[in-house]
Each structure stands twice: as structure tokens, then as C-alpha cells.
Length: 327
Image 1 (cartoon, rainbow, N blue to C red):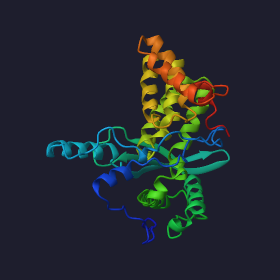
Image 2: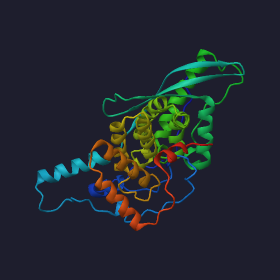
Image 3: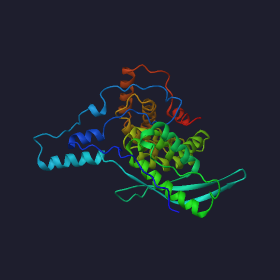
Image 4: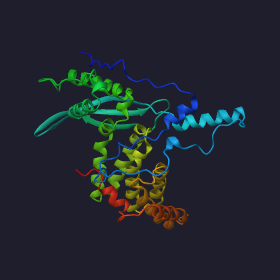
């Protein structure tokens, strides 16, 4: 029996063809942050200060004084910075989980980045009910895009036969590839959560329980996948990078903690109102002092931020991290 076939509407959006400068600006535009990790702070609306990223001009822009070689190099760098990352989904295997009161099939999903050799492939497992929940949530949010997408139906019997499992593997593989082909779907919080939420919940649970080494390994694995899925909005990875920082710090590895703090700050450069910005600066100030690095720049940023906006009682970076994904 062949895998279920999936179709998408002919009205599916195609990428706009625009002049090269506008294409770069469109690819790098600063969208509204609607995909952040679920936390108790998520309901608070953050006000972004200053011009948006899409309205800012690069410190170096193309002009008539540039040579042809300089112009080519300029656009090459711009394309490299804004190039869309595509990923490929493969369901390579499945296993039957037989518990005292439940029995189900877990499908192993391998996610790799296309276009170049990906040494950091991501491997996750999901069961039929996870796919079913994804489909239900996507129908609620994106009915027009999803109304023609078929979903593998449950069988009343024979769910654990080799033929049914093989059919489902092929069907779910095609299903994920079809969803990823639709821009609104692949950049949605619903789709990204399906791929990373279970692992993030495990990591934060370990963090709250003081299992820092175990939490660190979970976060290091999931952040690779998050970065592949959130190129459209790099700031979405900030909470996970900060959780990795917290784990390294509690494991007394200040140098690694500082390294991941720098990665998080790079993604917050245009988001000074982000809830992680000030706690991260405070932590980086402490780490820089401990490592004998330049800490004055962090202090200046903290003072500048405090002068511009009255601060309420500040929470620490660890206090923020342990509140992520609390049901």
C-alpha cells in the first residue's frame, strides 16, 4: 500500500521577485515576535524602541564610488547573511512502545539542512497523536492553506502491522515536507513547537530540578534544530542560548557560559526591550569580570538602558530560564 498523497492549493504563495537590494531587505525584515517560547511573561507586550530593522540602513551601502569587484563582494555578503536555510525531513525508522496501559508507535524524524553537508543533523521522535494534534492546530490557524492537505487516518485495527507502519512513515514524511514548503506554515509557532517543544520541556524540567549536565545536553541538541528553523527570526533562539549559559555557569564553566552569552547578545542587538536583554547583560558583566575580560562595555549598556527606561524589580537570567515552559 503506498503512502497517503498530499496536495496543496494552487494559490500557495510563491516568492516575490524583486530587485536585489529590496530582496535583501525583505529577507532581513524585522517581523513581529509571535513565536517566542511560552512563559508566564509572554502575555506582557514588549515595546521595541528605535527604528525597526527593515527601516535601518546598513553601515555600508552600495554606492557609485564602489568598484565592480567591491559591489559584487557587497551583494555576496548580503546574500550570505540573508540566505534562506532549507531543511529536509526523513522518517527513517519507527518503534513500537508497549506500556502496561498504552501501546503506540514512535516515528524517528531526521532533520537535515540542505545545500551543504550537515554534520549536525537533528533526530527527534513523535507519535501519531503528536502529528494529529499538529494537524488540528494548523487547521484552526491556517484553514485556507490546510483545507486540501490530507492527513493519514487512524485504522481501527492493524495499527501495529509492518505494512501500516511503513505506510505511515512514508505518509508523515511527505506530510512534513509539504508543510515546510508553505512559508506561513514553516515559520509558524505551531509548526516549530511540534519539532522542538517536547525536547525543550525536558530540558527546562531538568534545569528546574538542578540536573544541569543533563539539561545542557538536551539544550545543545535542540538549539541546533531551532537555529535551522528560525532563520527568519533569530531572536527566537535567545531563551535556549541563555538556558545553555545558565547550565554552563552552574557547572562552573564560565568560559563556555560567556561564549553562549555572546551568541545570545548578537541576536538581541536590535531588541533592547526584550525581556532577556537586561538580565543577560547583568550576567555577562559578572562573567566578564570573572574571566578578566572587558566588562566596562556591558556596564555602559546597562547604565544606558536604565537611563532610558525605568526598571522594575529585575529578575536574574536563571529566574527567567526556570520559568520557561511551566504548564
